[in-house]
Image (tube, rainbow, N blue to C red; front, side, top):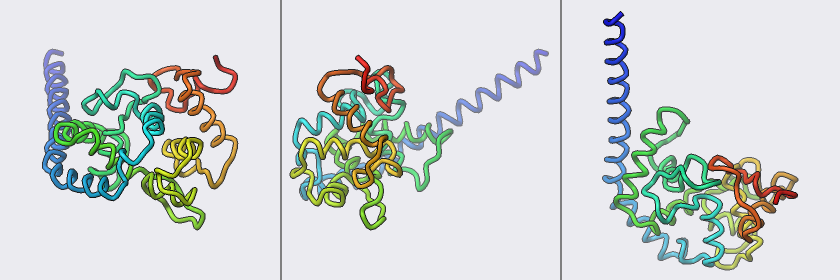
Length: 223
């Protein structure tokens, strides 16, 4: 019996070490890629495709929906209602560090990569890259669209600085399910998402819990 316990402990220890090494590899990869990513972010910002080109109130709404603790966390945050289990930095890491991300063990490397990004890039750099890489669904011609600025042009014919508050909120409604939600193909789900974000932005509600990424706490009729 004691021999089995020993083997189980050894196995658990090996799994822990493998997970730690996998996360550490992600951290190292992010730090190695940081100079190139920082230059990429600077070029995007210079072209008017960074957070500085977004109306401050619109930017506040986007972060409130996607990652309310963004300004303060170091890549991981499980404390803010509505944030879910993935920060904007982890979301970016999913796109930068993997050709194809699947939930499960890869979450460990994703998290290590996110912490590595936070150790080398500024919050503005991270947000700029997030805005440029986030999936935004299909345009009127059925072509897949990536990036907030590109989506603004595709959906409304305007760059981000020219969007109204209502149009920006509609863009903000898309990333949670870009294959299903779109300003070009409106439906009950999309309209409900926009309404919930608007209520949240106006301080009329709050998410029910950390995992309430669909903002059920802001549904119509909820106090």
